[in-house]
Image (cartoon, rainbow, N blue to C red; front, side, top):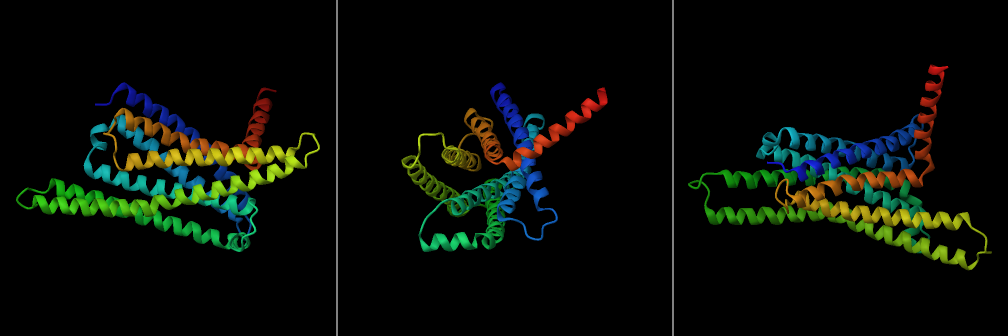
Length: 311
């Protein structure tokens, strides 16, 4: 039975997801419009299209799940439906985590200034590497999701099998092996994006901070717009990493069912998990004028139509 606190959390998560769909829709539309008609897509736009589209689908799926939990709780709690839901959930979340990590890596390679030969090699070849990075992310996410769903289904089959068919000790061994395989797959699928995101964010903040210190030493006392831009970049990178880590933890908690269904702990994770991608999209729009132009033009177009209608 759903409590009033769980219902409130689900409603908040739906509102957050709707805001995220709007934000990711703006990013997706702006990047798609800039790529239409061009023979080669810029690597940044390719990453942003992949990230925003995966989050758009993810947050739409989450809203569907939340509504099903509210209005069709008994049907949604069925084991087969739950396994299918978690498999899709795993694929969409892994994809989002991978694309978010590649965005951090891309920012680091393009903005940071390091003299190491490997870093220079990456900076020169990042445009050609991005399509392969994205394709690898899709394949890793798909493989992890299918394996995760198969493991859940196998455990459920062992649980529901008659005692005459399933030996207790054999079932325990199978379950432990399955759990070990599940943990290994999840570490490979979800641990690597976190490491990439953390390392690239730390390197980028370090590079920007060194550059800021040099600019402060050479400052003439006047307000420097370039200095403010670098400080804004550091704040945005730190916010990216903070949201990413919270989202990562919440995904693990949901996937491994740390809390019982519809408990207060799980509901708090649901709210945080819906808020983090939305907050990340808002920060991306805030730091990039390209994504601010599209809603401004739409708003101007609507105002012109309204004024014409009342004249």
